[in-house]
Image (tube, rainbow, N blue to C red; front, side, top):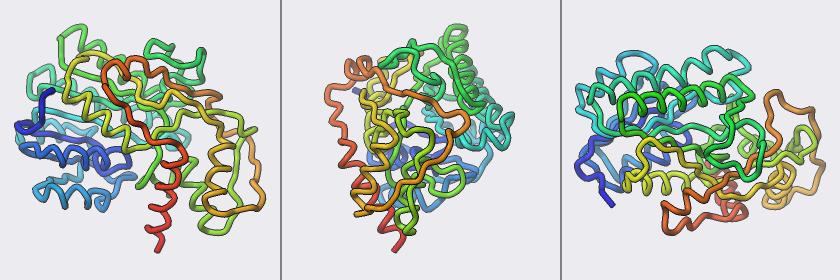
Length: 320
């Protein structure tokens, strides 16, 4: 397994939820340099504070990665390895569906051109399980049909296809990580927030949590620390150029069960409110992780109960 000691790394979207945790993990690898690009649409510079303690020479660039400026940075800083996590939240696709699609494709297009012209050597791109849509078969393998329900998910699927086309045409070094439903500290709790931070915020504010639809829709929830640890392991092995790897737990849990578990952690015994189905909601998600298991010797995944408790504690501390 290779290390990152000689790599000049760029993390696009690195001040966001998953991105900032990935930067933490990469900082511990002590590469030659780490550059973070983020336009702070939902990301926060403060999310990088832990990484800066480990790696004081971290470089942050407030930049829109859909613009050509990203390629100028790559050339100027002699970047060798790129992790792309930049996107706009799924909920944003209902406010501006065209832009939600465009962002995903345009950023990848710039990075692939840098790869094609040998300005960088490796690209690891974060797709999304949303590209699959609702499960046609369970568990959902990497060959599952791409049937996105939203323009955000369609943009993710289109970016994946664009990467595949460059791999086929030009033999570039790419790996697509297709993460399932991440949760944990630093997940956005404001605009376009996801289920877990929304529920925690309501409980901390003394309000009733809400379950949409019938609550029986399922997700494969993976703790963000596990996702980034597995990503770094895969990146260091560099075995799967041109491939796609699901990163999940291989277990599905209902939305109602997740909300109920958070209520127990909070000591909340009140009513769980009901609301109509959300637009674009998928019915079932559960990752087939056989490929992941074949590539990583020890998954050591955090249990849902452990992960939810850690997440609750983090949000509680952040409110103090």
